[in-house]
Image (cartoon, rainbow, N blue to C red; front, top):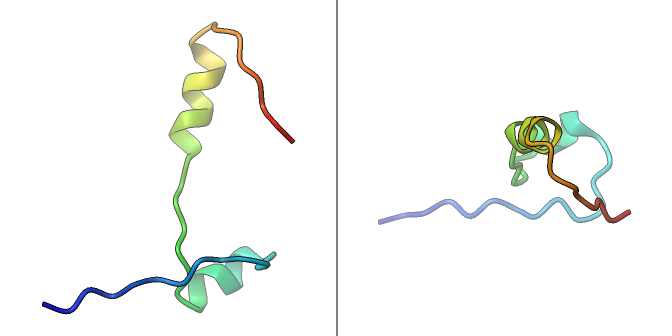
Length: 46
């Protein structure tokens, strides 16, 4: 069984390069929706 391991996008700034060069990408858009609509205090670390 061959499993393709994707590269971690360390230092990659552009979304296009991330997608075209086979880097790992996880879409967390649904988490943002939940944060905004659950009316619970949250802290986003910068």
